[in-house]
Length: 263
Image 1 (tube, helix red, strand yellow):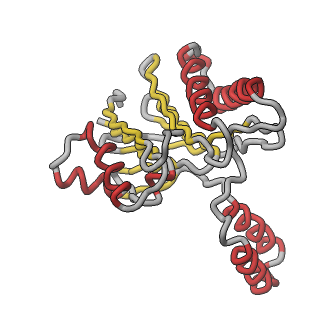
Image 2: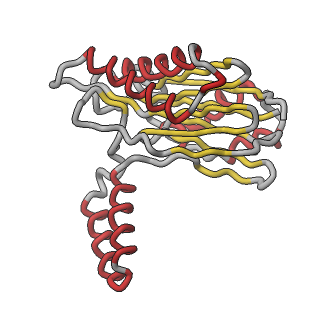
Image 3: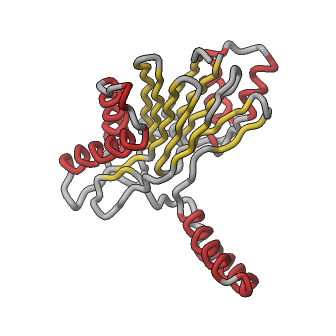
């Protein structure tokens, strides 16, 4: 397949004073890299962390050697470089952090990776359905993983384990969305870099929807299909329309949307 695509992008500060989201898109040697970062609101200067991380990925992607390119190595090296830059700007008593979503497309193969809770959704035109290709690194999923491991180890105690899991979730109900991993200047925070998804054999009309949490908590990816069917909005304005709808639905965060469609 000759890789052709079209993109719709928009970002808005929403109800916040500043926009701590930052994104970058770069085509190089007919491949494309899409990066989205959402500065962690609990840390200072997180908009700077988002910008540094995105720019690190784009700069290194521009300088890469296509014949020897390995996405996992590139991804991990970019994170290490971003961490070095962030930690030079802060001392141990200060922190800045960001989530990270990356999509790399080479010919008809896509590779996705993330840290934190920004998301990548993929639409398979042949199956006519959306699926999430990222993992939310938050307290809720950490609790789930803890008790899933216990259930596998002791299936005979599944009822007791389920009760403990429900109790822990209830105990932490106010903080279940707290991040357990991000790209941070804090040396005590180690980003989870092992989560990758490969999507082989991309087909015409397949789509990617890359979004910060200010969008996906208020808009489902199926909204894109509604826009396609309605034919009332140009594709280039899809992301702008999605963000406007998310704000109308009550989003109180920064909002960024990237929609990529294979042609």
